Image (cartoon, rainbow, N blue to C red; front, top):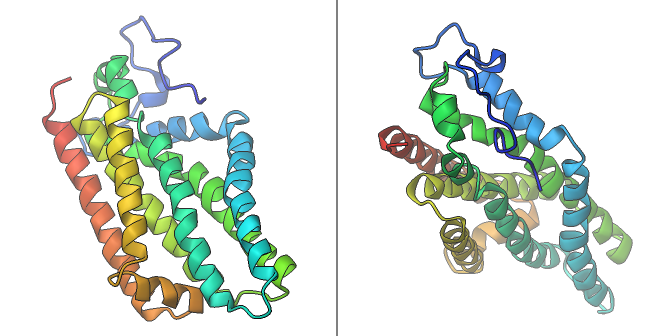
Length: 261
């Protein structure tokens, strides 16, 4: 488990922490860069990233290996269809992983009162929320990029064919946008509630709803185009999801600015 900032030790003096000094103390971006670095160190400053790699390789690629073993036993198969199935099922793993990784980002700091101490320094509330996205610099490589590349290697090893560059790129981009969407939702929920279980429950339910949508008549054509390497509809859908994620981030900032700590 990652050690949350300030949970093990909280400065007793009234001087500004050297990591939070910022010349523009009154701007919306006050303290953003030092807080971003601080949040990044929570991920990369120890072996948590390595444990994450191992966990996701076992969960995501282990399950995919079983699916591909079944497909390899068939006389004929379509790589696009197999990739379509793998993409939908993989969402269950990295979607829930995103929710669990982000569920305490806001709540833990509020419950420990560390957020009140941080905001007494040259740190804006906008920067506090935006800095939480630094976790994605660790989550995306370990949860999305590495397992996705292993997926395409498994497809070659089990089925004897390589996916096209467009199939690989569209698959990874789609998963990145979905993670961004679910992570933004989790941060928003963290500004609304004080219980991890409530945030996790709503987030996991949202993940399964998104899984159903990917297999529905609304998103199924998009998912099939991704599996076939066709970029137009997936590109438009990704822009739409990105805008929704941005809206959720804005709502999280607005809610956090209005909340009493």
